[in-house]
Amino acid sequence: MNQTLLSEDQRDALQEMMNISMGQAARSLAQLIDTQITLSIPTISEASPSDLAEIFSFGKVTWYARQSFLGQIKGEVLSLIGKNGCEALAELMDYDMPLTEVQTQELILELTNILSGACLSGLSSQLELKTNLNMPTLFNPSASEKSVYSWSTALLVEVTFSIESFSFNARVMICMEENSILTLKKSLDVLVG
Amino acid sequence: MHNPELLESLLRKLPMGACIVDAQYQIVFWNDFFSDRLDLQETDVIGKSILEIFPEQARFLKKKIHSVFILKNESFSYWEQRPHIFEFQSSRPITGEETLMYQNMEVLPLMDEQQEVQYVCITIQDVTAQASYYSDLSKAAEELDKEHKEQARLIRKLEEAKTQLVQSEKMASIGQLAAGVAHEINSPIGFIYSNLQSLQDYAEKLIKVGTFAAKLIDKSGEMKFKRLKNDFYERAEFDYIKEDIVDLISESLDGAVRVKEIVKSLKEFSHSDTNEWAVSDVVEGIESTLKIINSQFKYKVELVKDYQEGIPPLYCMVMQLNQVFMNLILNAAQAIEGSGHIYIRVYTDGDWQKVSIRDTGQGISPSNLSKIFDPFFTTKPVGSGTGLGLSLSYNIIKNHGGNIDVNSTVGKGTEFIVSLPHKSANEPTESPES
Figure 1 (cartoon, rainbow over the protein chains, first blue to last red):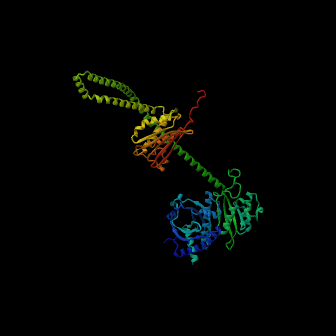
Figure 2 (tube, chains in turn yellow, purple):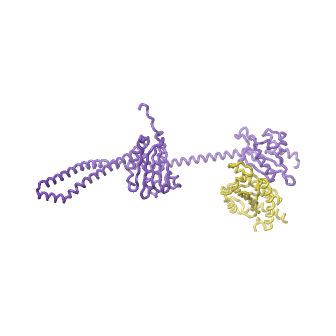
């Protein structure tokens, strides 16, 4: 049996925790930009390199950014920021319009940091695990190849943010490699009892 | 190690900027990294608002600090998007080229036991070396790219030149062939023409003689001779011959004249000094070109010429221009399916002398329109077009300092307008006394 797979109980527990913490994150975000934000129920899945390659095929409609995290669990948070609606969001966030290229980059990085920070701190505070986020960077997936991935399975915790008042969409994925998944499972077992 | 004094002195000496502010943006801590580089001692800034001390960055800092207080997460700023947040002098004042420090910023939340953010710490990292290395790299890449483009442009130019060379060599050999043929035909057609003229004269006289003899016999009253004469004239069809011979000879003379003209045009066209600049009449050039190519389309195309009176001659390479007109007119004729018209108009427009060649052919599709001047672009079947005619024409007109413009509507036809400057830049200035 695959060591890295979550049991059904573990999966349910993780999903419930993510749900609670994402609710808190959504309230903070709404306070920051003064706009109602809708969050999807977090989904948890295992991903193979080819799943990731598929995620990276939306370059026309989304920007990609990534942010690695270290601590008791390690991995990367991937953000897919929908190009649609970004300008309207930028205005809410007090950017000067129209956006220059550099300002757009800054906006994507800022959004990535806010969204992935909210997700990751939600996960780690519930599980009482320590994590530290590094600086976010822009990422052009077409330039990288899936053959360079040195892992076979990653755990994907995925949350979709959307803003109703105008069309905006972002997906945040917390990806963890195998060792961190084992740590995560131990913590889950302690909590579930 | 939980000695607060030691930790504070470490924080002061850290090789990175650390500035702690509270929720009202007031500075509560400011380490040596900041005071050394800004000439502002900690005592000068403690209790003051960071937004007032850095008014230019106030909006940005406020946004960042505020978001950390609310979200309780770190926030970042990267040198690539925002290189100089604080006006720190470069870390390399003696040897470096940069005058301002490139900075990465991280704003950290400092939380109490209840997980509420009490303060935020602004940390600054000096990444001048990294940034300068990176920008050197991008500069090198940019230069490489520029060189690459320049190379591609040269290769294209070389290709164009080669193409032009091939075409002009072809034209030269056609020219030589034409000159040879013209020379060979010139003398026989010369004597055919003059012989025909004599023949015309002789025939008239012979007819007169025959007619006179017949009248004489009729008048003599000798029925026997008269009958013999009538019989002989009738058998020889004298009445018919005397009518027809005039037509035959004058038709032959016409033909000979035309052959002479074609030979003359061929000689003009194939003139060996095709690349020489001279003052020439563009209309004459068009006419001599038409004589050569007219036969290729005279049954399906009606030519309509409109030459403005008193067009001044141009300083140009008339043989090369003729080649342009030949290409344009032949293309026009080939664009016409069935029958149609070609309108040739020569006129002046300001400083320009213009030749418009318009056809009622099938037109050029917009997607092809941008490519027609490219070498080897052709829509004709394989083997029947080289794809060089228009590119060569374009180059010739450019060499004259002129332009070729094209308007085309699919199904209606195409108009090429050749614009040539009245005063060529190459024209020798006339001496005052002449």
